[in-house]
Length: 304
Image (tube, rainbow, N blue to C red; front, side, top):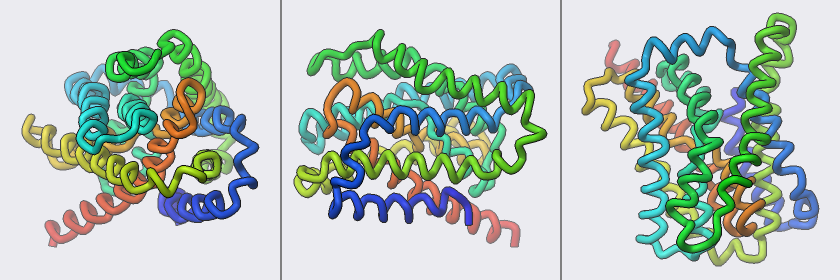
């Protein structure tokens, strides 16, 4: 069974455990950043320097994916929050998620949906690099009028949390990749476990308020995610791209690095602001897996 399919099960179980026994994980909030670093290291280990040649070969489609990621998703997060009248901490959290780069799980979902995996990996990597500057800047644009946004501090933290581990992963894969087959096969499960623990910690820390905000947060997250998936797919089709490319862009746009949103929310705003990111982590893997299954069945029927 793949790590992506195990993820929703583990996330639901850890959520229940954290809700009924919050004291088990609530004292361990300092683990969030190191765990996210492990996930980013694993992402880097999926890349080789040869992958970057793809950037020069496909600048137009890459630009479209990145533009939708950073222009559309934060805007929709803000509008959804306003329409649903989310409390300020939850609005901040959803906008942070919308301002984050593509999530690492998108590459697996893209593979399962028979999308363009090479394009998916490149889009995730480029959006991750750009996030060092764009995520804090977008947060400042959308929520800076509500609360102070420490843009430079956020940039430095994202550099440490994301860029250093990713580059380290690429270097390890380049020089030692042929000797690390077992570790590379296990790393997706390690990454899933890391994200599950992060979700558990956030759920434990917000347990006292969870019953008050769970429904509006879930509604906002589902709306945000499904809108991103739909926009990525239909805008790509409208621009003339084939179904395989459209599926890939849809998955990249709709699936965010919500772990980064969680880490930034906890560090710079409030623990309640981290809740949308934790819920998004669970939901986007469920929706991504469902869409992958749908697209796969659709392709099989077309061939028949």
